[in-house]
Length: 245
Length: 245
Image (cartoon, each protein chain N blue to C red):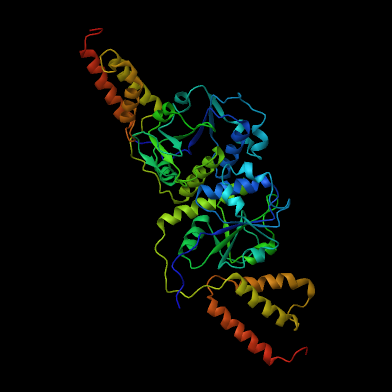
């Protein structure tokens, strides 16, 4: 059971972007380094946005083919790896890599990767980051960290392009990685089971506990088969447990 | 005769920049990766420029300390290495490096480096590039090369910052490198000598011939002592040659 040898370029996901101009600049930055697949999650001013085209300086193909989603979860459902970009590490217990490290990992595959970029003003929220398996942090001047959206995009796209020239042929005999939607299904299954127990008590701790679990369950590396196995385990456990005990 | 072990960070030289806003964005990009020394050559709208500050997003220190020069030659006179950034290689017979290669070379020293960036619309002119010893070309999508000034600056600054973390301690026993003004003096001396001969004939070929010579004479690596030696050679030759023959 082998996976196709071709590793698609990553999808860049702009989460709740504010200004059309910045979406256009991000498209230009992407195309400069050969990336064409942009996804937008709930752009503030709707889509299409007339300010995006002029700022793209000719990268119209990226804007024309951009797909729009309502939630981050839907935007990354078909991806095998999800990276979240943050300038500073927050209290998140996920692996943190540099743009270079992420680029190498993306080229090593297997599967398609998504890279999340937050809104201009505030960056990604904790719930967005919780969806990712890995954090990308650009090592920046600790006394002046002020990367705008297009600058963050260009550094990631640049490193991806650099790594492409160095990439070794992908392994063709790895099992296919779990897609994000497969992981989400597994997590939802466990969550539903736990909701029937006292696991999430007290209620005010529930969001944190959910994130902790998600982090634990989405550490990089599970294959689709492994996710199916875990789901089998959960189903088996659920079957053993009396409903509505 | 040893050179100081400290290799200063590079100077970024904006040659005939057009918009104050872009100067501000370049300052922001520099400071994000710890570079603070900006020089401006004949900024189109004069200096200071009220549009620069807001675009710098807090990188005011870079703008406040920016120095202004009338010519590229003056702006780089105290530098030991001059790099010119171009998106595409032109018909120039100088070494071409990537941003990463330049960053490694700058950290290896010795001496201070200057990196030239051209005007937004047109990029560096051939005469600007002629002053440089090495070309930096960002490997970009051949079908869509559209880097703006701040993007070019941030990629260079980012690679410099990355290389800083990898840099080995500099060699302390190398002879001090020739400064750009020392090279310029040597070239001017030879040029004056040649002008008295038929070397620059026919006149319409003179600019090309001058550039060819400059390229030949500024290949990386001459020390200050070597330049003095060459000047001694030239002076000796000039002395032997009958004036105004």
